[in-house]
Length: 315
Image (cartoon, rainbow, N blue to C red; front, side):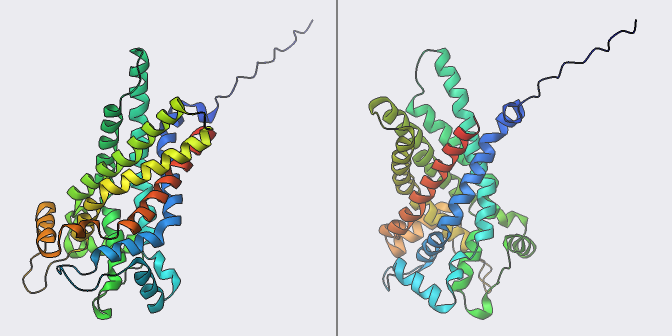
């Protein structure tokens, strides 16, 4: 009698989202998608913020431009889409910088949570701050070239028409800057960029995680409301702590050598801070705080909310 052929049992397929490699990559993917979404929404405000920071360089007195005045001038001299100048650089920066900072922060926090649970305690604010500082610093160093290209593209319109570089895209900007000034020039302003990122990350990620933990512990708000409220708190602290460093970073990344002397206006972070304080006054570091807050807070909120939603969606 012929034997009945045995039918192999179907092997259960491994869920792609549960694969160890996928789980490790998801925080980075979610961070990049969240950051790029937020940048697309906030780019016009970022453009106005940069123009405000570069206005009146080296002069203590003189006209004090407003955000509305800058927006009116940009639109009046061209078209509304000029507010999206440098969007390609902004998206590349988020694809690199925010992918890294949110991914590293989430990875660090998972490790801290495991250690805290093993010791039967909660993660401390200092531990969250350390995770935010480290994630921000590493990500900023990686993303500095894209950040520099963004500043150059946004500042190009302030020059006389014959002196403008008229960069076509972020790739064009990176290539031309490297060719004219050397590859090392792509890391100009890296130190203040790293310091700024560390300050922003402490304000954004650390205060977001801390606020959400406190709201969960002391309120009966829904998870969605907790996320929204915590992101609003984080946006304020991110703006307040990082603006002075963002101001210096913008000045350093915008500067180019004087054609006659071959010298740069600023030698570094401390030289820039000293000259601005002496020539323009200490309050200049917080020029455009309202615009910066309107740029940082919604960006932080959109980034954190989207990242949080994607994280819950892909669990």
